[in-house]
Image (cartoon, rainbow, N blue to C red; front, top):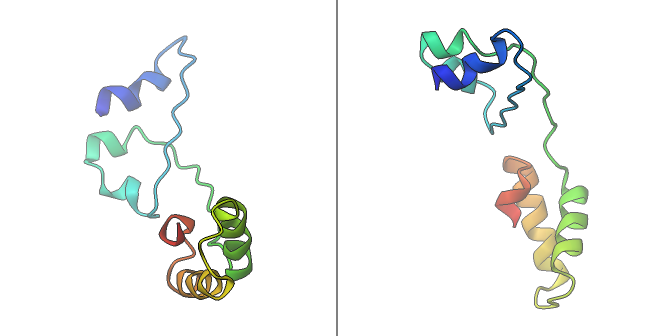
Length: 90
């Protein structure tokens, strides 16, 4: 891991590493030598709302027509109240 995160900082390197995590403290969980190679720029995405989850679910599963509208709303409200993570709804 250390070597991978060290490559972008080498002279003439054109490598950019983008990491994606479901937790905000992932960089802090790395060992000291790996953590020192990570940048500090973070983009935080807000959790999806129940309305957004409903729209996403309807778009993704509309061709199957096996779920009732009430079930989609129930899942969307539950997921949005817990985490807003669309993967949990799917």
